Image 1: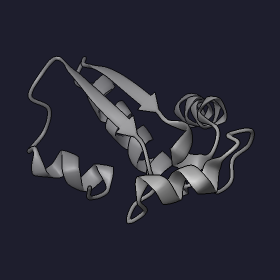
Image 2: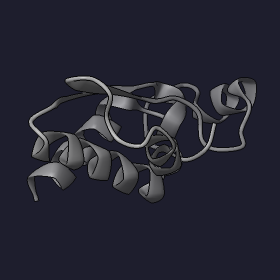
Image 3: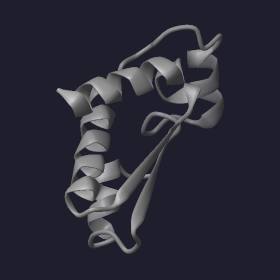
Amino acid sequence: MPPLRDQHTGMQGFTAVFTVLRLLTPLKMSHDAAKRRAEPYTKIVEALPHMRRETVHVVRQAASEGRHAYVLVNNRAEGNAPVTVQALSGMLRG
């Protein structure tokens, strides 16, 4: 899949009262490679600042339009979903 911002731009904006973002595997990485890289899912194995910034951008845009944004984070994205969520939350607050 293309980066989040490109996907969103291709949709020409939001089409519903909410948006869902799924942060799964890093760009250009297979599911199996991402799984091997991230196991045992106890820490961030590689922070993905571009993914984080794009996620925050789309969430802020949705909120500015009065829409809900749901972000589903998989361990394969950076290695530990709860820590990724904490980082995104911090970016959104600060």
